Image 1 (cartoon, one colour):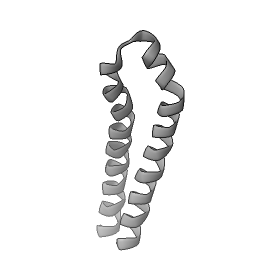
Image 2 (cartoon, helix red, strand yellow):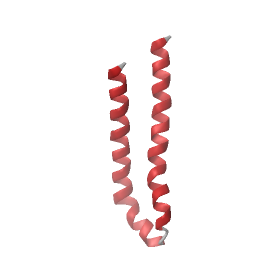
Image 3 (cartoon, helix red, strand yellow):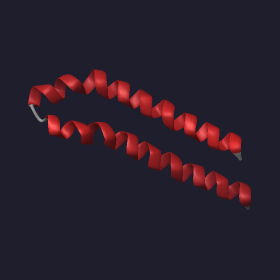
Length: 68
């Protein structure tokens, strides 16, 4: 149980870090070009939140399999 939670947390941290690097080095220039910097927080946080929700649902399904 604890090992599953550790792997889940490591997946979330690894993938969110990867997405953050992609966004930082790929979208910064685009955001500055259109002068819509107020959208930056939504553009940066949306993939991370979506990823956490997807992984949380998958993790809950795996836990329910183990409990059955």
